[in-house]
Image (cartoon, rainbow, N blue to C red; front, side, top):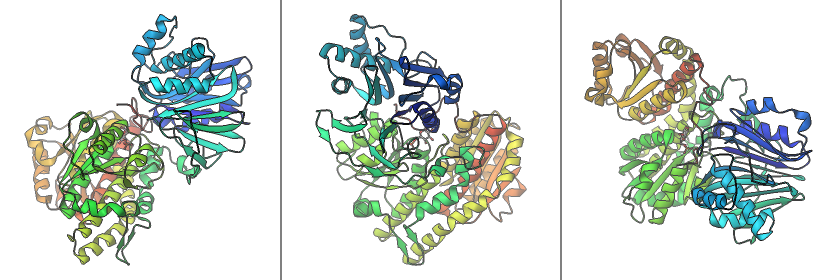
Amino acid sequence: MCGIVAYVGYREACPLIIKGLKRLEYRGYDSAGIALMAADGLTVYKKKGKVADLEATLEADTLSSHIGIGHTRWATHGEPNDRNAHPHYSHSRQLAIIHNGIIENYGAIKQNLQQKGYVFHSDTDSEVLVNFIEDIRKETFCSVEEAVRLAMQEVVGAYAIVVMSQDEPGTLVAARKGSPLVIGVGEKEHFFASDATPIIEYTNEVIYLDDYQIAVVRDGDLIVKNIENVEQSPYIQHVELELEAIEKGGFEHFMLKEIFEQPRSVKDCFRGRVNADEGHLVLGGLREYLDDIAKSERIVIVACGTSWHAGLVAEYIFEELARIPVEVEYASEFRYRNPIIKEGDVVLAISQSGETMDTLAAIELAKSRGAIILGICNVVGSSIPRITHAGAYTHAGPEIGVASTKAFTAQVSVLTLMAIAVARKKGNLHEDTFRRFLFELERIPDKIEKVLKNADKVKEISELFKDARNFIYLGRGLNFPVALEGALKLKEISYIHAEGYPAAEMKHGPIALIDEDMPVVFIATRDQSYEKVVSNIQEVKARKGKVIAVVTEGDKLIPTMADHVVEIPVTHEVLMPLLSVIPLQLLSYYIAVMRGCNVDQPRNLAKSVTVE
Ligand code: G6P
């Protein structure tokens, strides 16, 4: 959470940083700020609200600077207001800091500094950190770089920081522990950012800073050191990200673009991995561990949010095909229990961003107990893939809308491939069934395309229900996690209360809520529990609930009972979630737009949750 951008080089820093912050707004948008080395020295400009609000207050002609730092905030310590916005000055105003993360021992450090006469102007842990750095400088007469290094030895928590100093005007000092930090290396210029998106317009050469590393740009030269002050030779990577992948490309919102990208993103996910003609299924990154997975007695999945829902889908598929027991855990719960993990257990972490703090902590815990850790992530080079033993990228491309859509279908795609590969390894899949799966998988992108052709139908339904105050989503088997995901999408972007339930559980509580004002979304595709779901639909209709049903093409029965139906093409039962979730994504999108909500940046949320 929180996005940071910094620049030093020959370009105008202010517009470059503002543009970069806009690309990182998915990480938080409570306030924004920028610090520049302007004509009258180190100057901070900051404001509650979005980056555009800050931009509107900046008068370009006074801001010429070739060095600067900027921040877009998701509030942790202190309410979102101008005071708590970053950057923060130190007490003497000699230093300014941007920070993504949380300093856990800030209270003790603050008390100590207050006793020394430091006065604080915000409620943030970040202001404490910049004053701590200032205090170290004062006590030891050292450089900013050295003060940051010494501070890192004392602070507990997670951070990606960049510090600027009035008396070292051409220098930027950055450090990382736990929160992401990417350095862009250009010709006579350097960039720092929370991810590569603010950088790729200028350079594709990047360094992913490691934990406990410090990077300093001084007089145009970059040096990376570890916390022991030993110089490191960082690995410069070439990122493949295209600019168009992070722009809206004619769509009104990123979310809509990402929903419509799914035929392509799922295809990208299968590329080089699935070939039905040759009977070929390969997950390169997991090849070495396939035996271990096949032999494992159980698989534990850890994830949060939408990724957790993808994990639930995987539970059904792995148990069905590979016959390995699977437990799906909220990473946040797993890490604070005393989970039973044995040497050789397989722990599978799923994360779009690869940065979710709870998932990272769950991995560390499982690793310390000897588990094999595998990761399914979307963002290449992010923290999770760097600490797992092996994994597979989802290749969905950058997902910018806060509500996850194409990342979910890509996660489910990879997990399905994994389950099929493990089932085959275990000898559980007959050659014909295996081939049939591959054949069906290759047809999924076209079938998603077909579902998207129903977008107008979903839009009409959305118009009818946009003012509802509650929604219930019901499904059985593999469609139960899809129901959860549909409900999550709706509540996070339209602020309508929505609950997902296994359809059979309805009679144990939610049925009491059903009346003529209650829309109930059934994911009622043709599968082994179809008849049961039909009965559940009748139970809802008997209580005058309004039924919206996602059904398999050609279904003649449900359209006679439901108020509205959306059809999806026939596919293998196991692959159904890849299609059935799409109308639910569209429903939440259209309802949110009709209610005037900011779909890409829903209130209080952030896409990359780097706090507990
Ligand atoms: C946030 C996002 C969700 C996401 C969840 C887990 O809550 O808003 O869309 O599913 O974090 O994130 P991850 O990056 O680990 O998948």
